[in-house]
Image (cartoon, rainbow, N blue to C red; front, side, top):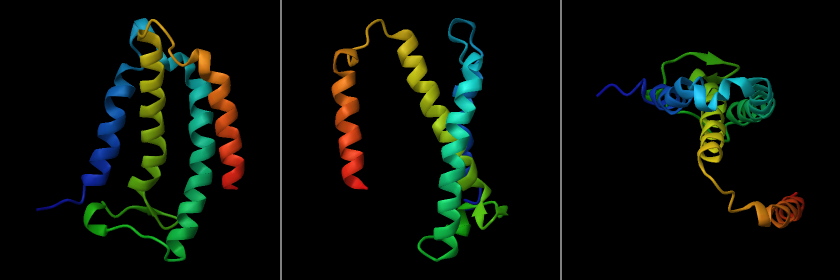
Length: 125
């Protein structure tokens, strides 16, 4: 069985519906792209650098059986697309749920959640 397109298929499958529905007239997510793309690309570049360094150091690697064979700076194209496709799909899903849900159940707890996460993240560093 040829699985060389599996990772690419997962990336493109994850982003296909969110990208298609980004232009839906009732919740036009594409109008927010000027905020979305910097929020995706800035961390993606940082993670790609980290990923490339660790891949080159041999900390982890990628099974060529699941890859098409196109590499940039030691990373397979599928891994690079992962850092774009998956965050886009997640942001779109978050926005869609927010658009179609009538009540924000977490709003009363937002500040407490934020402060807790800040403390936890500082403790992890």
